[in-house]
Image 1: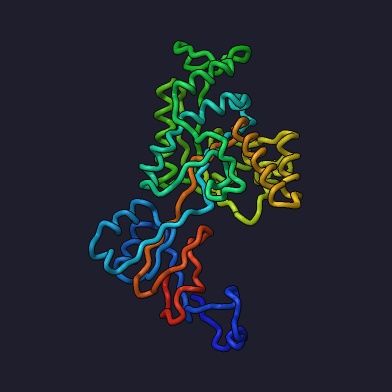
Image 2 (image 1 turned 60 degrees about the vertical axis):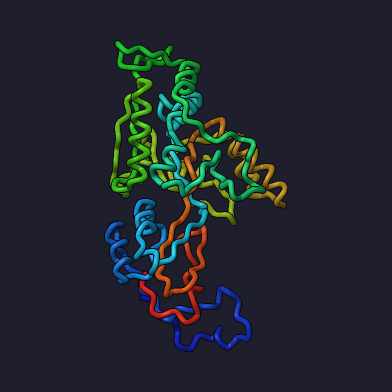
Length: 340
């Protein structure tokens, strides 16, 4: 529970700037891990606001006449995207054509409908399409194409030999192409994506093992390079474009879980950080996005929209594309004690 200071010095300013304004007198945050339980608490009036709601719960509330009468519903584009990362240190994933092939097995449009109920938007890169000056709109959006996946595997030197267990790469020990896909357990979005990918891979002869893991164990395995394909949410920042910890060689053993880095990508990442103008930054970011599109150390599946349901008694809620999806200090000058 956060209590507003009774004598806040900024109240004496004639026109306090937004960062120094704070309207709710008291805010209580409730940690409710289960989405269904949190939704029930919102419906009962035990909490006033539920942000970043799962798509299914959000849609169910909107279909209820009673809930529509008591609640307001908001969606806003976020800077958070769902991504599949490929561990390029794995022998089977070193050739970029293999990673390109696997990228063709994610049905992005189908997943947006199934997971997000349509409240998401596809992207060709890790830059949000909403940031038009920096997004490389010349890159095609990811397309679901098992036939293209087969062609790319063949270009990468894989041969499909059913008798030997599937795809075997010529010129290497006869180890068939078998993969695992790792993700945080208990997250419906990850489970749906993993199941869709496994089914699509099986249809072209690639066995995929599902590995739902507890969050800390998943982090350990990512840092140790012990995954093949991993599903993660990554939250971008529209005010900073520093990919050093994420995709630079300096990030090995820390945040660079793909193991990907080249001299060209390292140089671009540093140049983006040093860019002295928006025009230069835009040019470099577009080059960097094209490089990642070709190398495919990761596939950005889609950018999510944050979904918020709030009691009408709160008045209009200022929503945001940054976590937690709303600006709490500007929810009504006369707002009551506000449990979230």
